[in-house]
Image: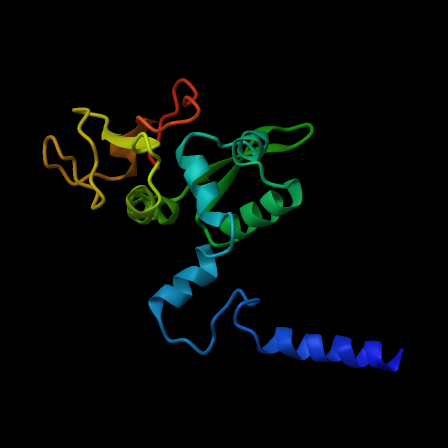
Length: 180
């Protein structure tokens, strides 16, 4: 039994000293580290992406992401606490909520576009991109820098929408309004 206690104590010391298991980086004076403290948890950016796609209700997000209920609940609460998402009641009894991006959340759009393009470049689907981001106004494809390749406008999240690309495995739901 004493050896078990020593093993647990040893594991606890390793966990306390490890940056891998932490969700903050107090020793790093870096804006990337500070951003990761807020949005770097597994699933966080995918939840933001789901809300941008119009999946604003808990069940819609859980279904589209295949995420465990407890994990989704914890991540949603963290994103609300960090003012990336805003929770609004859509049903009183029992209380049910929809989630909307705040300006802070919408400002993640360029990062999501960059990650989408990075993924398409370095982990491409054989048939081509899974999803394309297009300018709502003219239909031009949005570049990795958020610029419409057709008309040259610098775009924001509300100016674009996603459409299935040639490598899409599943069709998008009708009316999915927002961009990746």
